[in-house]
Image (tube, rainbow, N blue to C red; front, side):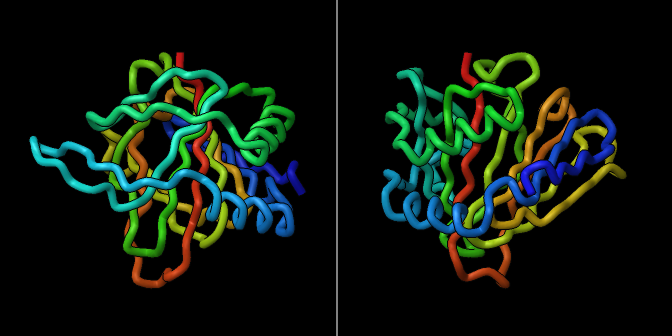
Length: 196
């Protein structure tokens, strides 16, 4: 049920998790369409002056033409396909939040990952809200407090689930999707955000 909301009580963070945001049949339909039809690309990012291929594929979509920059990489959005627009509308209906962009990530298997980071780019506003829809393989998602080493948290993001990070979360916490040898199937992560 969509209203199956879990709110996690973390210091300096607001983390909401809807494990059943999309029903299994609907999540399967979206997964198959997005896997085969989004414009997936492997981009290079600059780390310590070196260009390194990201360990995942990505694609940016938006309701406007505003570019999005992170890790010295600038992506120019494409228009939402109707499937992404439908997910965005379901998200808005459930949360009363409106988003302008969707950064889609494809983790081809457990070797693909996302390192520790915060979504705190200036264009995301003072308290960014990130709504993350997971499709495909269930993966471990980890958070750690930037200042308090004893504050760590992890959960497994299931197929069809929705995770929302809001409030001061991006100021005080970093998050990652670590590599794993246990997963050999793809996961799609749709991260909806508003770019000012």
